[in-house]
Image 1 (spheres, each protein chain N blue to C red):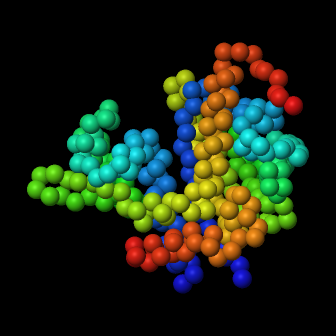
Image 2: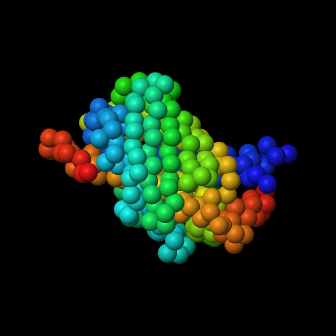
Length: 122
Length: 154
């Protein structure tokens, strides 16, 4: 029973975080953070085909981060608040620590590129 | 009462640098200290690194609130420019908060590098990264919310 509970905890979080690893999907979430949008509105700022956008949307829907509803010919997407809260717990704090470190790593790699190695600050 | 929680964190990043330089950022203590550090305001207490299979690493920092974060790690597998596997645990002063297995994979992509970081961790107690030792029921609400959200989902 406890094991089952643990697996249940993990599955949605893994899906949520996997969904958020892709920059296009993060852009879609950011757009939806400003309010519901149709698929073509979501696709508009992205440099990719509509089928590619639909695939990303599938991943977002599977994670529960996004819900969509088809009315007539228009599919309208919105952020699911409960799933966003899921991503706001202790795991996302740990994840944010790594994101910040890897941002610093990217800065360090960019900074070191053209020059010989600089001495470390004391 | 103990609260034991498991999780896996995967970060997939691409860097505009060849794989050898990205690997060196993990394997060289001076390079690693440039990015594997606390945020501004944290004071380095001690840093040691013995980068070889069976070698250990230690980094401790004092946070502005006086609590010391302590990272202790042990290297299990090192394949230059390709893979690093290590375990580590974290303490906030005397509190033991997490134990983890970390895998870092490096893959050349064009002139750049894809780096996939996977941390499999067990959370030994309810904690937050500000070191809230005196945490009360109010701040453990995150996990309660999670529980409630999952009940709805299933």
